[in-house]
Length: 340
Image (tube, rainbow, N blue to C red; front, side, top):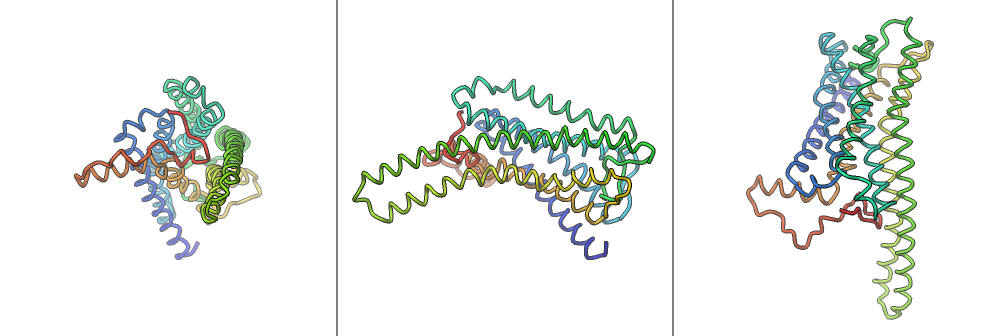
């Protein structure tokens, strides 16, 4: 890796670190400042996801950045093992949090009338407790087997094979870890969001039928109004697919290269290039910067909370409640609304 490649990767990683730090902090501030957000069950999953991303940003990304710049282990063995332990724990927990959010969305859209009884705060707390216990098992196993340390391939403190004689055990651990974190979460994401997409398209088709019947009855309607209605139908049909594609696509794009790389390097005759190893690690870190925008900050309720925070800092009057429908959620913008 030459100087310019190293500088570019360091710049990208530093940018991801800053964006992830600020955006995840903003999500937590919005949650703390808005009683409306605190009353919603999905808010617990969003807070857990932002907390995992924030801790990963503060406690692991700087070590990777230093390892990339110095081209050697940036801290002592104990600190590096702690960073590898946290990375394994937090990455797995973040994936499970995304799976929990998709389950919540599935229940809200497919079973809207029974959502309040099926998903309560206590249920969300139990699900989060399981996610933490599930995620904690693997770094504890890695620590007990002394598989935590600095990997020059990824310029990072992570799970790393030190003794060649343990390759079989390490391979079994690696496969089990990625199956129980990445693969499990991906299956849940695909199942739930595709179910949501199916229901959303059904409701959109029903709305389209009503709209077309109305247009037929209003024979004197202006052509420009008719065209706007038809264009809105087209956007409504595309909106659901776009949202689902972002949820699943960002997950696969950011995590799949790293997971595949970790599985491929288990083969004894394959050596992973340092340049590709760092890029795959960078993609996993970029998910921490994307999550606040994918799941939170682009929603109307969080936009309102951000405006209120800014107004408080500037000592302005709070955003007026009239004329602004905070119940609209861009995440649920495909013809359906989550019940409060």
